[in-house]
Image (cartoon, rainbow, N blue to C red; front, side, top):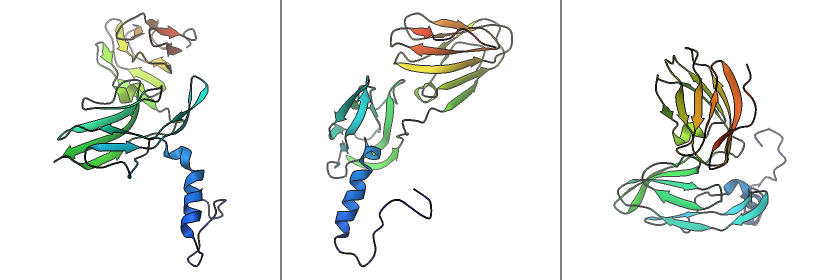
Amino acid sequence: MADLATNVPQMSPSQASKEATLNALLDATSQGLLYGRNYITTTGLTWGFLGGMISLDGALTRIANGTVTLTNAATNYVEATRAGVVSVNTSGFTAGGIPLYQITTVGSVVTNYLDVRLPPTHTGRLQLAMGDANTTLTAAQARCRILRFTGTLTAQRNIVLPLAEQEWIVNNATTGGFGLQFIGATGAGVVVAAARHAILYSDATNIVRVTADQA
């Protein structure tokens, strides 16, 4: 806590066995360390990460500590699936995945990294002034739960969402009187009329409507 009066046990300069207090505090905060960098197993092009407990389909599941192998002389994107599987690629974060780290390597060593993990409660809001064309959301854009689209349309346009299990609140705030069809790269989609909003859901195969369009 950041309050002046804290509930967290404090260490004093004169106490013995400070490491015992520190280790106990780290153990208490271990859930916040999930997927964090494990410095002990991180060396060269091997990136180590810490495990922890997560909920997978309602079941508490323990993710073990692990490592992934980075590509040299590249920007590496370390991410996890919603099933807790950690992987790395050099293309970019996958739409529908969980971003963890963006890592730069040169000379077979890590030269820089960005910790892009977000708290589970972070949802975010996207307001996108789209062009008069079909639009595929980026991985970062699709991670937002609230999606609001503006711009002027001359025909119905597609908004392509990732086919990973996720729910969105969408708002078609475009002008021109045309609907937006929310659809995955494959499968069926749904149309939200102009000046309307709805709750949509990806079941990993199709984009489906949770609620009817609302003004």
